[in-house]
Length: 423
Image (cartoon, rainbow, N blue to C red; front, side, top):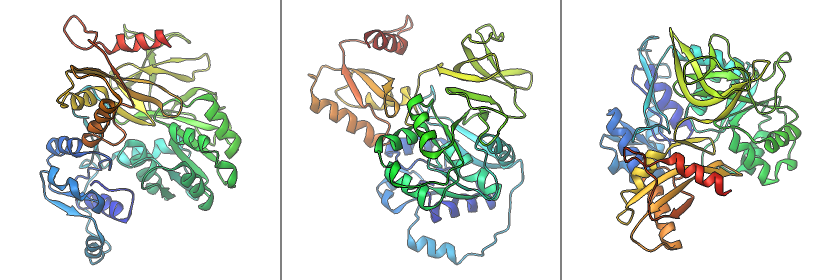
């Protein structure tokens, strides 16, 4: 289903799972290449498209239904309560992460019983409780918007608000005020964009709990959020593969929120900072954030450290994933798309710091064609048309050659080091 949050989306999502089908929400900004890759991977029986996405039907490779008013009218004629044909161990959802070392982001497979784990985690991570008016503006195509923005709060009997369409910070602030939202969980970039809009002072708010996820939040934005909404913004840390494992417990009076900290592990999980030898790191020493699974440790591919009080801190990614505006993007997938351009000989993509988005994609391009602003725009539009609208290089630098490893692979670490040394 390639739909914005809407009546059509919720009908398709819950209807598919209730009748025993597997629901696969897709980001609505995927282009034909991004859609085609995911369709080929999961081989769906049906693709449900929003009317405005009709032009993507040719890239589906499967039967397509347009979720327009006629489709909704057909759905309205069906019984209100359908027979439930699913069990706890049945597959419920495939969810494609947006970052991986593979060309195609991996589908994480969730069984129906996952809702119990996620609902429990939400109690601690978002602090959500029945009776609250809860909002998550993240897309339900991603883990945060799907599990913590939709499924977990609804399973707990909480009223939710969702955001559809192109993001606009002033529109979000208006909605928070108009709907008297008491609990909001958003990406760090959402908060930065609200701060930069200078529109917050136009409204009054009923916020009691705030959380963020997707990437670290800068101190200035965190201070702004607490000043405007009257409560500290708490971190939620996890991945699509492992779920939420560390949180700041919003609403808990007995766990102070430390600026810059991820928080403490949620109940039922064991998290540690381990060095390259698999040994626990001392407080203040950077290692990899690891989750215990059975008898072993599962890597999150994120670096971090502990303080003396047992609070976890994030120290960056351990791989080549790029996090921009809360979206996790694969450097490999971006590079693969750019290399389809006839004038791009070689390329490498890395994340570079950005005041609003945390990071943006920078592409280093080797080409026999002369560099120009026209060429830069052409490369950007080429990527936008084939991947997601946000998944393109906002910065492009033309170079004569790329650094390589002894095995001949592009060494992105050298590019990042060069950029840091020059800043």
